Image (cartoon, one colour):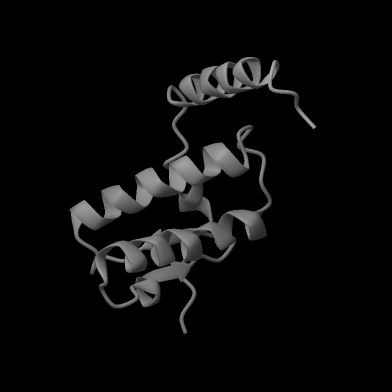
Length: 106
């Protein structure tokens, strides 16, 4: 357990780590594994990419995640968007890609 004397140091350290991660760009890491369909507006795609990038930075700060781990993050992004806006789920708009980059048909 961290004592009260060490707490300011820990908070400062975490703040510096998060500040450094702001300079990293993880928005394109999902493109090898799935794509956002053309039905999604540019505004929603930008929001998705920023939220995905933020989650990657927190969960996998070294950008070293397996394809399965990367593919699990969009469900969190879509769930977050769903709870924030009250809109219906948009998960049907995200289609997994095959190894060759083609879109998987349902």
